[in-house]
Length: 68
Image (cartoon, rainbow, N blue to C red):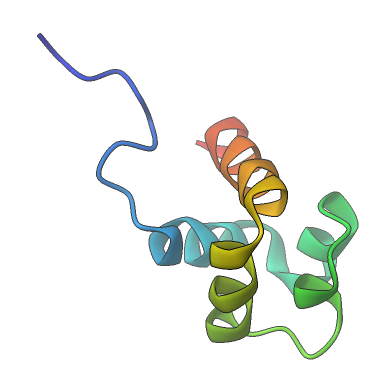
């Protein structure tokens, strides 16, 4: 049986990096209204925030699924 979950095997870092490469920080901050994408954004600071904030991580994962 094949796993059809697009998030399976993807680390949060891979997901955030893909979104930054696809949309850029400015667009990402517009699409998902969270400070870690709007104020001095970096992958490292975003990962730190998203790992502690389940609702924000859910939004990021949903956008990733839409983008692939």
